Length: 436
Image 1 (cartoon, rainbow, N blue to C red):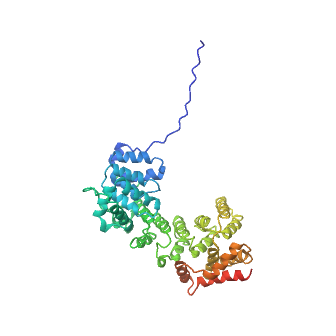
Image 2: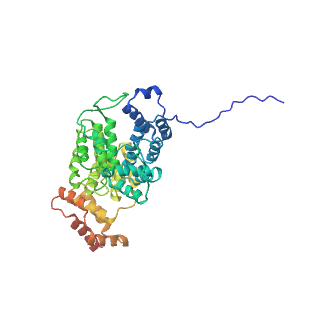
Image 3: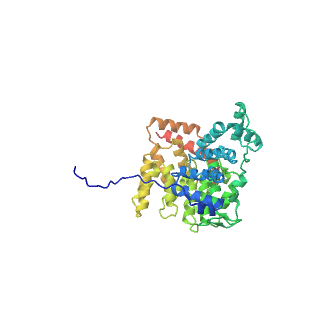
């Protein structure tokens, strides 16, 4: 039998990224804050790709405070149940309050996960804890308790659980008036020092729980004027996360946003963050919508990219026409690519409802926006001779029934005293109806 040459076999094995595994010496050298910074870096650098190894590492060492912080300050959706389950397996005293904290979520999926934890995982412990702290509960937790009582779930005798979180404790970093430092390569926190990641965590909690109420709202606006640009930017971005109606209309002062957006003295990242915050209101706030177009028409503006990104979400066919015209003149290839991509996205999107198109046109005129003339001309061409039956009916409905939302009317009244947005929109719709 002929000897066969030994041919090396190259086995291709899919590379597997190492899991979360700091050395024992490094971990032991760190206090709670130092360990949390490592966990934060893990989620920032790897997302949740290594979440299983992260939880395994923390659970093995009974790092219940860190598992709870992952529930308090999540960076993405979908993993609360993983962290909560680990706390439950460890019978951690933080379990119930971590679940209750997530009942406060604005995101319904996260609230559902918290409901499941109380009702399915440990209902006896849940009822005993909720009963013990009934006077401190928020409405959603009160509802859970009522349902547990109705189901006659028995109480766990003397569960070893900590009381609910106080907002003034979780959000304490927002009230800082002192210097904010980077944690950097430290392993332990300095007594009395406030770090940037602590501010970011508290701001994330405000956004996720929609805590745009006093005193946190005033603290947020104060942070937009902090000495550190990073703090200012994070505060502006957090304000942008407020759902419509969460911030009282008297606090929605476009002028304060624009004072930063148009300030040559503010850092570019701060101006960009303030623009993105204003841009989040572009869906319903026609004044903000007009300002986004003003900025987008000036490619030298420091917040130009942020305005164009916002228009990609809230612009319409007219926005696409403006940006297409601008793109042909842009010399910067990065700007040109962004403008062209935004045009393509807008032309592929669904047109806004007729009332919204007219509303934006009217507001531009009432507040004397630089875009008013071009917008008015485009709207006239768009609707004056329309033969689309649905649009004709929509114009008639707007002419007869349109009423300006109270928050938008208040913003318009502030910018153009004496303006009657409702009458102006109805009048424009009626004019197009007569001219058919």
